[in-house]
Length: 256
Image (cartoon, rainbow, N blue to C red; front, side, top):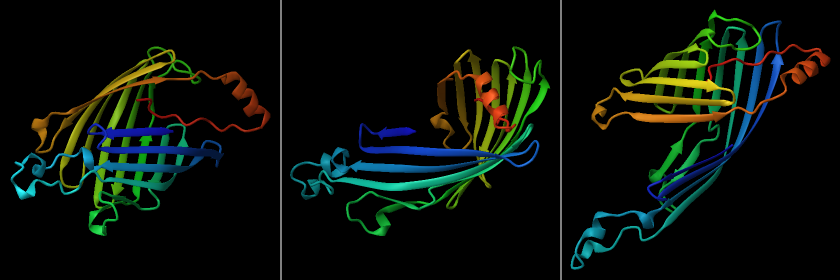
């Protein structure tokens, strides 16, 4: 997995290259555990030369006209590991993941002291969800008109920041709608609505965040996603599974 984030026309850039290894084990007749290990290479850079300070706007006669940081570029390269575990039954799943196992130090100044460094502490994510099938024509695949409800709770903790996400997805295949509430232990943060459509190998989704904080006048945020599902030979996988005398089911979870 490769991700990149470029802010302010290249003032601040973050790139992440990750490799994830996953393996699965059947514990009981209907209970499975899934494990994952992640190793990431993280690169951050801050180009002070593209920043505009108040001193840059002063007249030439003013002794404060010289920029404080003339064109200094700060770069950080670090290894970032993570791991996770998920357990699931046919109608219930839960999991725990930790990112940034090694605290990351992101500096905004070259050779700076600790007070100019940002520490990314380990981030913990716990989740639990369920699958409630209201109507389903077959047990092997989804058909038009199948109705399911996916309630979910997600808890995220990093340093002194703690957030809860509670919500659900309602699916009338191939359509999906959802609603979420995001908050910490003291204040509401956002109310989120989403909708999606699945057709053949395509999935398209849309979500909107209603800001519930004192910054509500800034408006919410929109997100649109487009996914392409690579078809696989399900019959071949079944034959291989039977040959190995294992009946480990796949993890079923919300698609949007």
